[in-house]
Image 1 (tube, rainbow, N blue to C red):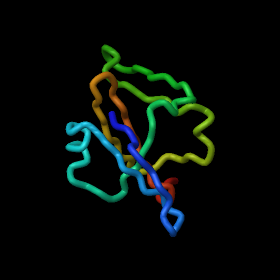
Image 2 (image 1 turned 90 degrees about the vertical axis):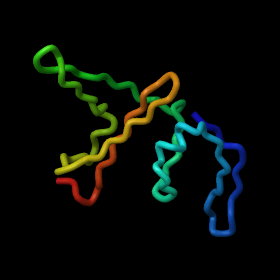
Image 3 (image 1 turned 120 degrees about the horizontal axis):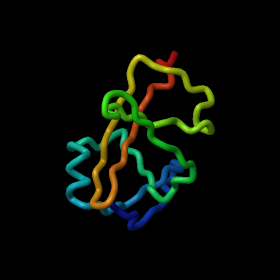
Length: 101
C-alpha cells in the first residue's frame, strides 16, 4: 500500500503526483510506466458479493452490482490483475469499451 506524498498541477492542467509504494507493489508493475491508474481502496462505496457454483463450489464469480451494469455488454475478452497487499487481495478487471458487444 502506498501514499501520495505531494501533488501539483502543471501548465497543461495535468496533476503530477509523487508517490511512495512498497517495493513488492512496485515489482508488480513489471517495469511498466504507462497506462498506470491510481485508486484508493478507501473509495469502496458500492457493496457487492461473490457467488460460488459447481462441484465443491470450485468456480467463483464476482457479481457486478446493479449500479455499475449500465451500458455494459459482454465482450470476447477481459483482462484481470491480482494485487496482493499484506492484508488484502485486490482484483482489477479491464474491459475494452469499444470492443464490447
